[in-house]
Length: 135
Image (cartoon, rainbow, N blue to C red; front, side):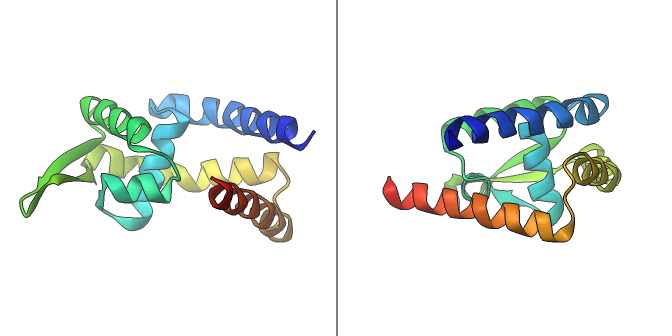
């Protein structure tokens, strides 16, 4: 069953990430938010929702917890009070130095050569795109 194996793969990936992220004091979902902010800079919550293919009900509480931890700052857009921008704190930005090592462990653990990674991304993106069109 493809769906079972997708679920098992997700669990395997998060299990490998857990010991890598634990010393940093962040969860896998928090790491995804940090990675987006490291790559793109300050982002509105809506942009995080879109880029992480998630929803406001998941991202908003996650970002609030990250703010409590001192990892991000939320700022209302003065031109649009409904829009909240998320920014890294210096402490969270400093965690960026761990990203290359984490990426290296992940690629080695799962045997992601550039070709295998590209093939996996193609399949996973296709599944996500088809699911989006179906809903």
